[in-house]
Length: 137
Image 1 (tube, one colour):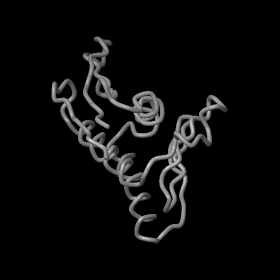
Image 2 (cartoon, one colour):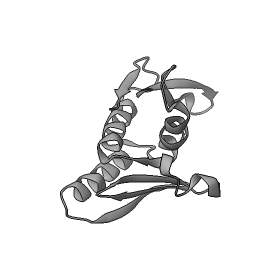
Image 3 (cartoon, rainbow, N blue to C red):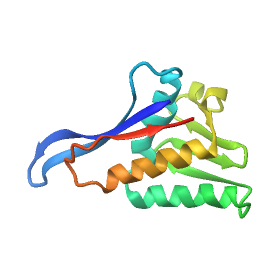
Image 4 (cartoon, rainbow, N blue to C red):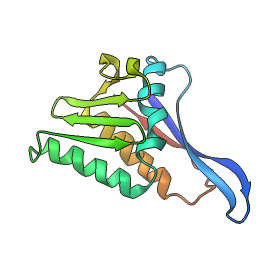
């Protein structure tokens, strides 16, 4: 699976000026594209708007991996990440059909890698044309 993270122009809004948004998408031609698009790409901007929020979730994943915590719930804006030793369950609360689904379960390694690369994108200068590619197993 390959994901692409990049900035897109959101227009000019006085007095803020030029606005850019962080975007995530599945690279074309990927198997399980719908699954990753819904449960990974579409939730990143809801749960991780800043590098600090990425760090918080990365610390939670590390605490579970190291055995300091058995489970923890992270997220925000109607999205929950239920993290335990078996992986990360992504629940999108605005639709009952998007909670507790087998296809919304991912490994700790996958989510760590996604969050590390998303954080990298968020730390780039706004308007950067760099595209961040994430290759998941």
